[in-house]
Length: 407
Ligand code: SOE
Image (cartoon, rainbow, N blue to C red; front, top):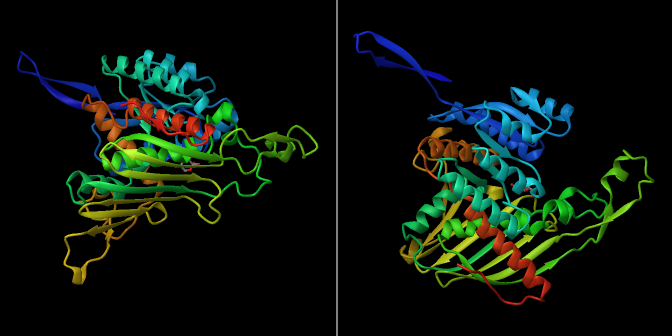
């Protein structure tokens, strides 16, 4: 978008120059996260006054036909089939990485070195080493004003942001206990095929990195504290599954070809927080009947907060200083204009959903870029999560040995 500006000239005439306020996006990937990010890039400027206007310049996918179909549905201006081409284009300012974790490091580091801002889906990487390399590249690029963010979007659910605000204000006092769960059940059926998320070489880990990463980030974000140590267990309940190709018949196999599941189906761990509290975590894809339940409860010396993503517009708040006669958890409907992000949407009581966290992510990222700020969560925040994921797996492999997390 070009915003005309009036530049007075020495001759008293007014010259009109145009300042390009566009932020041109090149997105790699076009599946579930590609759709959620596309919706966010498209919606954000319609609902929020942004200092830069996102332009959906290019979508990239190895399958040209599939990428073109998504381009048509969401309004991407062009299609690439090789992400390297995005880095060479002068009409792309930011690379949005919506691919599985095995490609995050390569794409992000190359993009940062090419001077492109980067938004990278979670978890940041498939290993601590990759996350360290990405963080180094991000911090080096930031010296030249190139910004980066990792996509822990649940921080930007208004109720979660409100919880963080209340904890920071001291409304629940000192954090004593936290219990965090992320419960799904989409692979309870043993006939569900061996998706890429069930293969270590692609996904890095299973429920732990996919959904456990979210609750690790959320607990540290809301409390403002770090996990300093943990002890963990993981399990893989279904050891083998039908290969996707065999189930779809694409390769004409017998339909019974099986493959090994090389990641966890569930992870549980106990941990200590830097403020002295204790926290328990559970991430599972076998919570039969739970579809996308992120449940967090934080108990403090002065009160408690409780949240369930399956009821994502509500935050429950208990104030221990209330009179006993009327004490109880308050049900806060987080839809008032004073609540984080809500002013951009609808009047009180008109709820928002899963996709809006992605729009809020775009809003914050665009504002940070325009104001020369380093966005949060940063790649360093993503590296911290990666270290915790690694500690969980090491502890579990060693029958729940206690693992310290370096500051
Ligand atoms: C699958 O578990 C998944 O799509 C996660 O990868 C996302 O991060 C989460 O937002 C929804 O569930």
